[in-house]
View 1: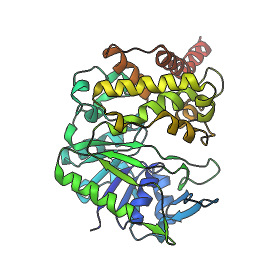
View 2: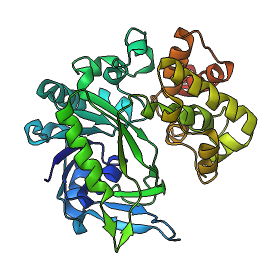
View 3: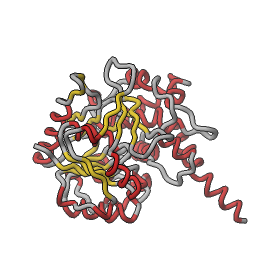
View 4: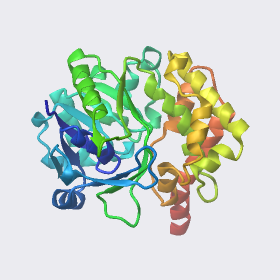
Length: 354
């Protein structure tokens, strides 16, 4: 049965969108007007490397069994969709037209699966030990999430690494690390049935007889996606330095002992919240994968380009750690560096005005 899936965000969202299209589902990407016009005219292109192949394959949406269209936030008819995927960066949800769409999604009570690094607040409210914590400070605007029922919001661990090549058009995505999306279940079994249908359909996809990486894996545990926190705090946010950004590989491997200490501490925080060790990814596996991540993280690139806001999982983990009585000096140091870099533009702008 073909499902209709709404994906907010046409960059990273096009990776999951392509896998859904390959499985025969229908996908709508929500994006800016110019990007929507480009996608509606030319489709999308996702470049991915199959197992044991040296060169990336280009997968074009126009060649796939599912149908793809792209719209601006104001053009969305929420009554058409079985599932919403949240694939924008967390600060983007503060845009007025996106916020209006989010209200419509919440009122329609559509199940929402986030593939953001930053977990939506309603998802965190499903975890009893987090439900009463003060975490709003970590969000660009926490009010975006007020209308959402926690049981209707779930989370993927967005482990696949992908980026838009800067020299390419906005409909091209290059997959650097083709790992899996690991999703937690919803509160309602009917919504979980949809998730498992999507999981099975994506798993069955082949290309010229070859398996296609980047699966959707569904887990009963709410804590599986939290495994990404250890990776983000060890690698992605430590790409941000007081000087130029560094690659994820260098952030992790320049001091492997320190990296493991940070990784282990964040894992311990997740276990204090209720995670089972089986929900987590061993440091050795992450460190090996990080060896191939030769670019700075998207957060580091955004800060370097002057972005005033980024997703603040670093700050979220700091807030949780302190409220659990498990502060960590290295995590606090990372947060301080990110704060300083984000504030540099304000300070520079202010000094120039006096």
